[in-house]
Length: 486
Image (cartoon, rainbow, N blue to C red; front, side, top):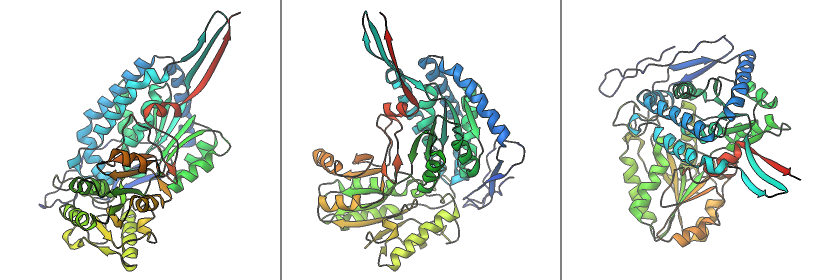
């Protein structure tokens, strides 16, 4: 089913990009409602149990041959697959705008995908190399790492390519097959990845794109269909994955979002802090796992910071993501926008002060996925907007009198993904970072994944590790060889 053509600011119809085709036996439908205009953008039918079983059997067979190839050969082939994905970028970018609302002006996710792929490929040989403990006349003792079999990657809609690559690339390079389940909101991502890897020369069966409902997903996990599961999504989704895997002893990596704080110390570069933190809070319409959702500013800088932040946000343009001048697109779904509206309304009713006049953003009519950005002051931690994940274009800002107060407030959260510190003092940032319960500490930046560093979290953010050398440990198992020669 095709979506109706949305109308741009000029009144001209924006051409909908060509989409991939897919047919299957009818089971149940997965439907992507475009946030651009509320119409059905694309649908896919879920696969039957027999189809899924055949696909996974094929993956098991292909994986055994793949594991026998050299690390260098595997890395070369999957890197060619990413090059093929890059060649599709002119189609992928507007597809993403239609599916989840990110403005086309930002060029999609291919830059981050390439950076992560390149780094993980560059460290593969050293990271996966056998460790020879002894090679004497009597013994040879070696510690090796071998693939786990099939890695199940469950990707979210907000960054369907970059989050997926975090586990797909090390999994394939380490000799595994990959089964991929994309979010309903971004149904086309798995098809694009499958086509790209095929074009890059990946043997058939090693990347399997699955269309599954929640019940089928849980059943496959309960049946121990996979050697490792990597899930990025909600806390509720993570709990469901753990419950399905209970007793199977299957390895699981969970990245379940956050309520990431920023802290502006008294010695911070005010202009840089305001620009960086507002971008971290509002980019992708606030729909970033490691986006900034709450900010604490030293009281001596508070008023100046708030004024600069307000000016920056008032300069954004909310509108159709297919128009180049748009800097804020719609949220991915109406219900997401309604939840953020509810958080803001509750905070205002409890005494918070909104600084952004929504009338400056006429695309926000109050009943669509288009949501005006908002900055709230006079907030506190009794408010849902300061405690629950918002995942939208809203941020609360509070003054603090000391590092100790900032640390206490940053730790007063059920989440722990990243924290962003703005200061001229690297030693102070290190000391403060040691006291914050989180997975990553940033200084003078935010909302970025460094592929050389482990991507991880604590508390309700989940568990496990991706990227860096530790990312290979998740998708391989250790195997010891104790060989007595005489």
